[in-house]
Length: 221
Ligand SMILES: Cc1cc2nc3c(=O)[nH]c(=O)nc-3n(C[C@H](O)[C@H](O)[C@H](O)COP(=O)(O)O)c2cc1C
Image 1 (cartoon, rainbow, N blue to C red):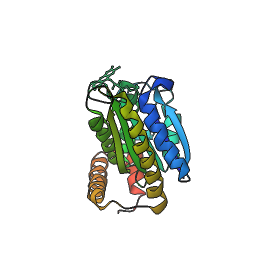
Image 2 (cartoon, rainbow, N blue to C red; image 1 turned 120 degrees about the vertical axis):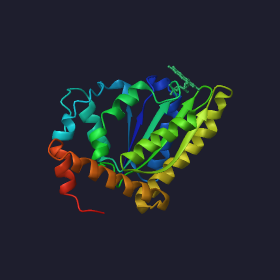
Image 3 (cartoon, protein in one colour; image 1 turned 90 degrees about the vertical axis):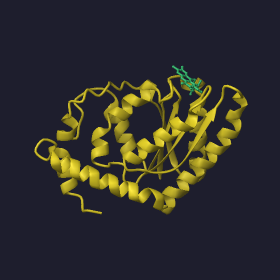
Image 4 (cartoon, protein in one colour; image 1 turned 135 degrees about the vertical axis):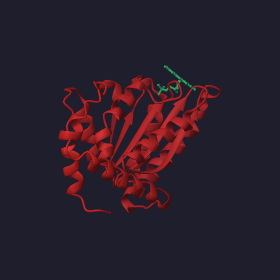
């Protein structure tokens, strides 16, 4: 079982979000997962320019680190996304990665994977940022098992109980992967996404040839 954590903070070892992400990965490792960690700010991810070539070919023509990071995501059974709250959103560094994944959404590439999210904030919004990251994972097709968001401005020591919560989240994430746990409340969403994406891609079948071939080869759920 492979679980990959991706942190959107550019602060490297000083990142408080990293502390939460590492706690999730430690919990997952204790439950038997092989874990990996990526600081997205250490990678060159150029902005999506909306050329739609990935819809046609399955590949982005930009030459940067996206393909290597994406390959690791595809190889993982579960993905943990983390970001500090930057102006009530994820960091720009992480958003660059997410914006490069429209083809992955159209093809529901994360179907069958699990995920969870963590966020830290100075004054507010950590839960909202973590919820957005989980929503993104679900839109990609993954099933999410929970989130930890913590506001640290008033009490930096709040990081300690949040790390314990994150550790438990990691243990639960690994258990969900192992059991193939089902979340009935997310199944209607996933089915709706599959239907929407099939319909969208079929409507563009002459242009989005790689995406059309992907869906044509996949049995209907
Ligand atoms: C550019 C920038 C924007 C930020 N925006 C917000 C914000 O909108 N709300 C908030 O509560 N904290 C905000 N913060 C504070 C960070 O979310 C907080 O310090 C976080 O714990 C940093 O995480 P890190 O240590 O993982 O980098 C911002 C910090 C920076 C540098």
